[in-house]
Every structure is written in structure tokens, then in C-alpha cells.
Amino acid sequence: MTRAQRKLVIVLVVVGFVGLLLYNTLSAQKVTCEVCVTYNGKRNCATASHATEGEAVQSAQTTACGPLTSGMNDAIACGRIVPEERSCRTQ
Picture 1: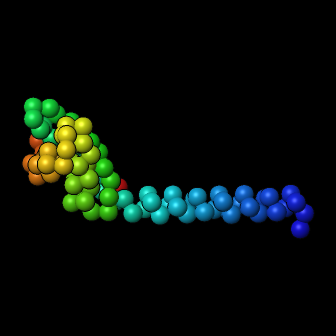
Picture 2 (picture 1 turned 180 degrees about the vertical axis):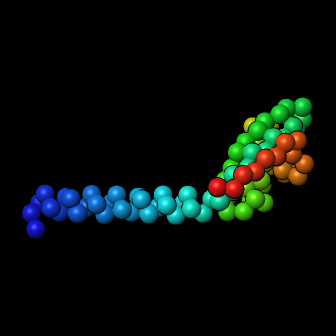
Picture 3 (picture 1 turned 90 degrees about the vertical axis):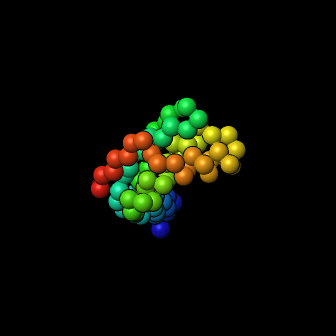
């Protein structure tokens, strides 16, 4: 096997591996949800994708709460409030 053939094999293996990782990551995310929350007078929205609607909503709410809170107590409290807006779509 020549040096060029070895390089080609290595490139093909790396591209195949990256493709497999991308496929596995995207195929597991079947629901996308956008959630908007207001906490301490500030509002933020975020979008997340997951395998189930419940997981997608929770992840989006956690992401939306991030910039609105300071500290763990605020993050937990914000995560427990009912979102003002919530929309989900199946992929």
C-alpha cells in the first residue's frame, strides 16, 4: 500500500466516523420545543431538541433561565415556573 493510499484510507475512516457521530446525534432528537419564561421581571426564550417532548421542554426552559438567574437557587426556581409560551414540533 502506497503512502497516498494510506492517507486516503485514513481520510475515509475519519469522514465515516464523523458522519456516524452526526447521524447518531441528529437522529435521537425527534422533538424541538421553544420555551419563553419571565423571571424577576426579565424575559428570555430558548429552543432545544430531544427525543421526547418533556425532555425538549425541560432543556429549553433550563437554557432560557440561564441568562435570567444568578446562582443555583434562582436557577432551580426559574426551572419550576410555568413557561409563558411553549411550542413544540416533531421532526
